[in-house]
Length: 122
Image (cartoon, rainbow, N blue to C red; front, side, top):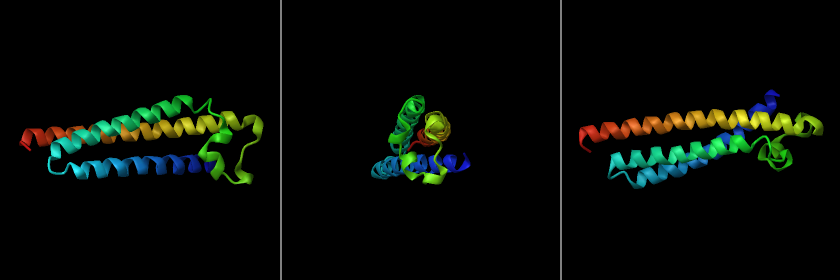
């Protein structure tokens, strides 16, 4: 079970990393206006949070063989077919919700930074 959690963490981390990289590049493009850059970054991170919450809601029902996590699990660490749907769905749901919490915290932090820039006058 711990190996499954680690694989789920790695797959979701990689996807969130790519999304964060895209958001960072977008923010760098808006670096001439820091307040707007952080407002946009916060809004886009909220979109990522929403997507993660939606993925968490559907994780229990998505066929486990169609998940990226299943592809990365070696044969010896795969659960038996009878319990695989429930185990994989639960592990993925917990992982998605963990990352949704983290991305929401990043979005709030970006919003606070945007407010600071607004008060400073940038």
